[in-house]
Length: 580
Image (tube, rainbow, N blue to C red; front, side, top):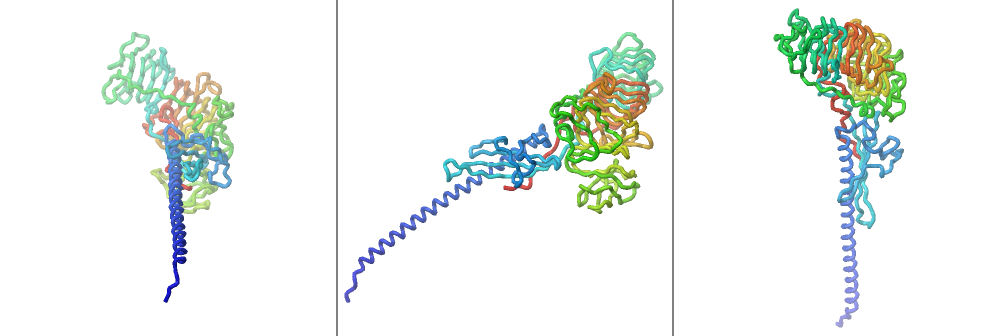
């Protein structure tokens, strides 16, 4: 049999196989190139994500810096102009040219933050940018967002012992501090310069420290020789004299000069010639003008009634509030910045009942939370969303007590700042550092109380016509029962004159009581028969007849804003809620 020739078919097959192999090679090449491109693209997206992460980290480093205020919206440039998340459909984006920018070897990052002060949280946004391997001039971007809550700092450890004294800071004159009238009581007095006692003045404090000289006129005395208990622990760094006689080094027994002293051992009748050095405090009015909450840069985010006016023309720091702000008017008010809620008791409470009724439950949590009424904390365990609550009394180490109907009740949470006045129960509520670019007063002539720890800065002066107590017993301040680590209202005043006598930053009128702290850049003056409990600092302390100073416990924790303590503001928490 003769076979048909297959050379043509072989050619066709060879050509076909060549085409197929060529196609396979092309496919392999395309596939390899595609894989390589995809790998570059994936790597670029990863780099962009890492850069975006670095922007979030950079933002956190800025918020964490102790010298920065994490509750100041200018700490980071804004991401949106309408206080929303960057990814929110309603967001009005700011230009990335206004954001912070960092450049690295693999690309760059732009980052920003928008502060929601009413909720005490930041919306952080970061956009990482790196080269697009598929385009000569292209960029791969990755946007990352995070939410950061902020815990306000409202108290801090005391780091200047000046706040355990009545402190007069003037130096350089023959009589830096003159006492024209008697002072009795058991608080500690510190005179940085020279102390002069006018005729017949009796100075009876638990401790008297004089950095300079001590000059006693005829019949003036420090302490009494009756017993060791009537002697005063006295330190005099300079000389002393009595009745205009010759000066002498003030050490050893000085009974002959009417200085009836004892040493700290309580037994040795002697003057200590080594006066402890206590640095004078300095009030930073400019810093707190910007950072107080509420204050000129941030008024109330939640309010009722007519809260104080904090400024008239921010950002001009110029004592612009022309009329002194009345902290105790005839009508109630409340001002808060940050999270929280407040209401009033709808009925009186005994010290033992475990249910209470409130005027409103708006803003309070729907699960267990802590409240404060007067000096008592309570744990709310039931009745959420209603106006009748079940409570556990005496929470957080507080003592169960009776409470008046209408008394202010606050959610005990980390709010940024509060000032409120209950005109019915005559109770002031304070928390944080507050600034009024003007003067303030207590004017109702009544026995008032306050709850909380707070510092009030005033560009102007402070005048008191009434009593203000941290705690009340019967019809007077409870001087024996005060715990300044729990309740301490500090007033820091920079002005003089105006509503006060010409040289006074602070003036307290006759027959009233003050329980708290006072700082005057100029003099602090007390009228007749005034009772004082707490630290006082002024250039001079001016006294009328019969000032009574009461012993107060050594202070270990103070409200933020106390002059000469470290300036601390708020602590950002770790970022959460990442998207992108």
